[in-house]
Image 1 (cartoon, rainbow, N blue to C red):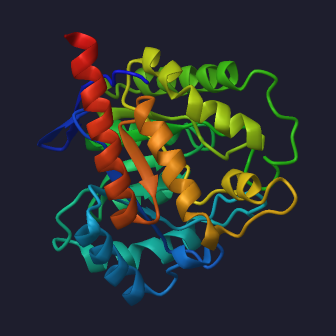
Image 2 (image 1 turned 120 degrees about the vertical axis):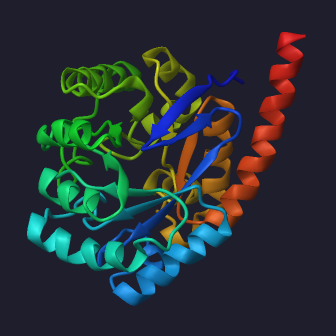
Amino acid sequence: MFSRLHYRFRLGSRTFLLGERTFIMGVLNVTPDSFYIGGRYPDTQLAVRRAFELEEAGADILDIGGESSRPGADPISADEEIARVLPVLEGLQGKLRIPISLDTQKAAVADVGLRNGVTIINDVSGLRSDPEIASLVKSRGVALVVGHMRGAPRSMHKGPFARDVIRDVLGGLKKSIAMAKRAGISQSRLLVDPGIGFGKSYLQNFELLARVRDLAGLGYPIVVGPSRKMFIGWALGAKREIWPAEKREWGTAAAVTTAILNGAHIVRVHDVSEMAQVARIADLVLSAYEKRAYN
């Protein structure tokens, strides 16, 4: 178990203290091809309704994605991605109380999002796909999550995988952080994500969960997103068959608990109400450990 570091995280004029409890980032995929059927909301009205449901269920942040980054996914154009996310953002403007994050690797999409209520850009490529995102984030005074992804969604699970996944993730995130710093993004507006499931073997994802604490040395809040991913299906299928995403809720709960106890500040999940309960218990366990450790 690990004593979680505390950070002041700035979103516009608001400052959040990360570390006292786990923040829940609720996933809203406005795509027709998300790996999890229960998480697909390509219809604008349904997506807007789902956003309010996630807020009511306890989400601290809403993360909207218009392009699937599942293994094997084909890329789409910026215009198509904008056509998916913009109507949802317009439907939420001035109505949603929690911050909105936009999951995109394209500066053109990020720009549209930032002009329509988005205050966090969640770039799973860690600025590799489109470095212009960094200067855009700086100019708008918003926050940035830099993720680690080995390869690209279309081919990332075909290998080769890194021999040392921790070294690979730390090295990649350090490069992303350096790019963000060169653009002038302040430390209080930057978060890191080890990219669970993005170009890692099944076992490497478990290693990352076990060693989330190794990321603490980077000096930034940590976001972890294990929700219903394939490595969980592989483990629950006893290595013989991949359990479908619809059956991975309990496995996700275990992964979320592990991430929190090892220092994650934000967990990105589909099942907000259930994982908020998981996080509450894990936070109390972590708090009890920290009190004992400092007494």
